[in-house]
Amino acid sequence: MDFNDTPKEAKFRAEARKWLKANAPKHKKWDDDQFIEAAKAWQMQKHKAGWAVITWPKEYGGRGGTTVEAGIFAEEEARYQLPTGPFSIGQGMAAPTLMAYASEEQKKAYLPKMASGEEIWCQLFSEPAGGSDLAALRTRSQRDGDDWVVNGQKIWTSGAHYSDYGILVTRSDPTVPKHKGLTYFFLSMKTPGVEIKPIKQISGGSNFNEVYFTDVRIPDAQRLGAEGDGWKVSITTLMNERASIGGGGGIGFDAIYKLAETMELGGDKAIKDRAVREKLADWYCRESGLKYTRARTQSALSRGETPGPENSIGKLVGAKQSQDIAAFGIDLMDMAGACMEQNSEFHQNYLSLPGLRIAGGTDEIMLNIIAERVLGLPQDIRVDKGIPFNEVPTGS
Ligand SMILES: Cc1cc2nc3c(=O)[nH]c(=O)nc-3n(C[C@H](O)[C@H](O)[C@H](O)COP(=O)(O)OP(=O)(O)OC[C@H]3O[C@@H](n4cnc5c(N)ncnc54)[C@H](O)[C@@H]3O)c2cc1C
Image (cartoon, rainbow, N blue to C red; front, side, top):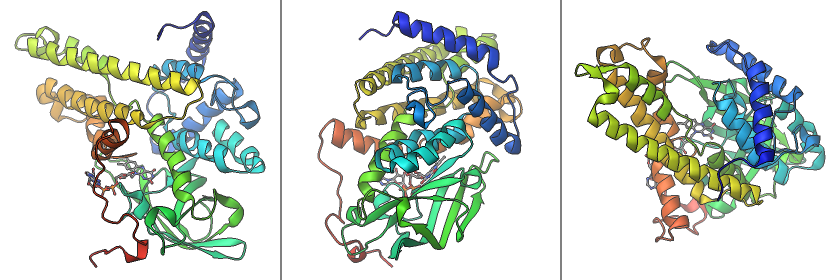
């Protein structure tokens, strides 16, 4: 595989670089209220200039470009630390699911506003009893005429408090085995009966929420996939989730290299220390491995293939590596590392990265996926396999 840009790709990269240099906002620190407004403004600016959701068809607000072009733009955009996070669930997970399962009318109604950043979407999957084992979820949906009535609770819903819409998996039939009784919907977060309660995090932020559903009515027209086929639809979302957070997204090699060049250790620059150099070399090798693994995924996508289980490797290796880098950075700062204000990039990452190792599937779940579906090792023990959900012993 040739990792260099073709002449056409090099031209695209140069155009993207030029546009970003002229347009990327210089302001880097936003407080919580300003952040969403700044993110929406940046998304709209990209959209108007034709740089938003590069691979989407033009009629849905995209550019009609290739996955390689999208990868090039993302690489160039990543140099600027811009507020793009609030759109990752909508554009990266909800949109591919809508593209696969929604009606043409719905795609035309919802996708362009996702592309322009006017509307933000969240993912209402995890529950207190349904996280790693998502198919064990209990939020109940019951058909009532042309509507469904939903009751239950979701948890860890990132961005629910600023989202306009959500994708939702529910249990429509508890009398069949757990994967077979699920039904998938989308809904407005302003629907009566939806209550959002923020969760306070160790980093001081409140990025995710508990979401309660009390007699929430969802029109049947907002069902994605057939009744009882919610697991199949969820897999489309989850595969895209792992692909979109595949690179990890935390602090990387460049940051720790720069820090090692400036910090003192044993009377000399830390970068001169043998043990520090050994760690840097190891992280550099891993980061290169991740880069080429991503390139392999990208070239598979460009051949029209679906993101596969091997995407789990990126998150598994990337999130742990970033966590190690953040911890080592704080150690290198010596006494100054104890002060949060001294270098907030390392501290913020140190506090938020345990979350990245859990979100979208924990390390153990990623290892299970790699073991079973990539290496073909024997399956994890599944004691509830084939048993109707309402007959699975719950211990209570
Ligand atoms: C930052 C962040 C953002 C999130 N955003 C969202 C969101 O927007 N929407 C949403 O729906 N969810 C979201 N989540 C929830 C996330 O998907 C779940 O936390 C995750 O799937 C783990 O589920 P759990 O928390 O219930 O842990 P559990 O499933 O209870 O796991 C507890 C522990 O047991 C281990 N374990 C579980 N099963 C196995 C097994 N079979 N083999 C070995 N070990 C196992 C796990 O690895 C873990 O260490 C988010 C989570 C985080 C941290």
